[in-house]
Length: 535
Image 1 (cartoon, rainbow, N blue to C red):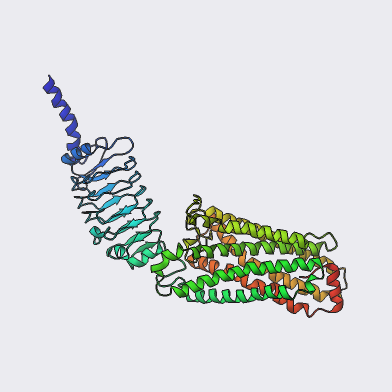
Image 2 (tube, helix red, strand yellow):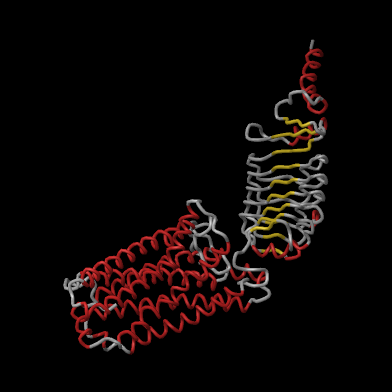
């Protein structure tokens, strides 16, 4: 009776294997997925079953496994020669585990393996012996690990077979250029480093692309390179003139408190715009310094303190400039609409407001840099917040989501959008007030002045609109996924549209004012003094 019972058990265990490997129309047994275009057995081991090397080996003896799935099993260690018996294996999935180390000879014997999934683990290093015997490997997923080092020779076993390599979401820092240069048949490469695309040469797909740089130059567009240098130098000269002229030629400006406030705000605007000139000169100088060899130093440049500092002062410059324009607009609107009321902003209050605004934006601009300190770790920001682009900007104009992207949206879209609304509202109020007052004053004496003031205010509103509103609109469209911004538009918005405002402001607010003040008539000066308006 016992013998008969054993025979029945053997039949129950072996029939499914025979059915799987030899009968194309049969229903596969539990944990098997059979495809019969060519006899293929796949063993799946997931959260519902605990993997067992002995069981896998036994299955393989009866039916050579061609696809093995061990994902999501909380595997932390793997023994050497773990898969050496699976000589027919073509696909191996070890993703979504806790693997931190890949020992040498782990994949020994897998000469037929074509697809290997190692993504979503904790792998840190790839050694020269990591992928032993994988001479037929075509597709390799290593994304979402903690890889910092790829030692020379790590990919040597499949240099003539690998077609697809995914290294995204790692922290790759140490590698040899020749490691990637030898991948002669590679067609697709995905990583976090643009410089890797320069190493593998011309392939079908390589990401990420760098919208600003080429393999040779930090700024690949000649026109952008020239404009950046010209805007930087002219902005430095113009804002320097503003600061010096307001500092040493301020006798007239100190006659009343209103002019003192205007002088302080204009000087503050010039200082903030001067920082943008410093940023532009840093980027242009770096481009000249690395000309012809940028790809080799791209990683070092983006992770450098100078790049982070340049990005921080760019943010500080832009935000302080916008804040000053908003304060200046409100102050002028209040003084023009209600010229005989109590001053909204006197010199003492102005100093306090300027000091607070600078303190706030210094903190917000340099806060992402604290992760560069060894004893501080803000998990919200990555260590290289401003180094995502070669020009060291963190503008939220693409759909890419890097650590701290919400922070950039709040600053560049939220605050700047609100500021533009306040500025526009202030100047609308000024225009309305000027129009109303024009009907009640002596038109012969005031018509020319009202027209001139309206023209100057129109230019101010128009230039601010052209510089900031397109950027805000592009950011909103990008975040709402209404528009995927082309690379060309993104490049020019980041490198020309925003910085040009710092070049225009000094000429618009002070140099024009210096010329127009001299053309005023005595009786007209008295009218201006009475209304306390000095645009």
